[in-house]
Image (cartoon, rainbow, N blue to C red; front, top):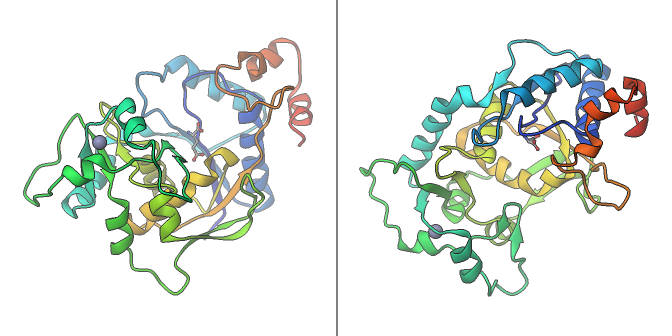
Length: 292
Ligand code: GLU
Ligand code: ZN
């Protein structure tokens, strides 16, 4: 498979040094491997996405010296495809509606199973309240305007596992330094991840579902992204097996932190690329600041 990677920002704020690092690293890897660097706009959260942030992304990345093929894939244009995948999982009995709010979940999850964490990649691990209530009827139409969760235990049962089981290849490292082949046990997926939301209420999809379908549609061979998403990769591998996509190679990179050691967030306008540009920094200065 030809080396293809992507940078996939959400247009919900200014790009900062952490984004610059991720985009430049992916771009450099593509160049070094005579591959392709793609840009994807992850705008499924329409309540927070803004056209001017999208325009600023194009402007900042161009200024950094990056180029990419056009047209750019925008996730919101692909809502019908996400819906199709949800319908497929629904008709296989792998999803169920969840009406819990954050408080319900926190209350029910306050006594986690011994030896397992309270928090997974998506926050508090879902205690399964609605799964136990739900009796699936194959004929029933997929409910609208409600969150849909993946029944992880059922999903694991359906996935045909070869001798190697569920795994992905990591060429960077997880937060704990894990690298090479990362094996995902059923235990870990059940108790350390659980029944994740695949369609958010009022959104009709989720980061996990969209990212997996789009990486497959764009033939991404190498996913380069921050270590904060390392733990979510197991969810993506499960979805690739359920929906029939290949598992790409993953390269998780350390996060750029501020002087106090805190990772940069969207609201850290102080580290915005646009701010450094306005102050007269060059793209080479930005590369140096992130250690490239
Ligand atoms: N859109 C995600 C973000 O802004 C990136 C997702 C990914 O690279 O898988 O953090
Ligand atoms: Zn629920």
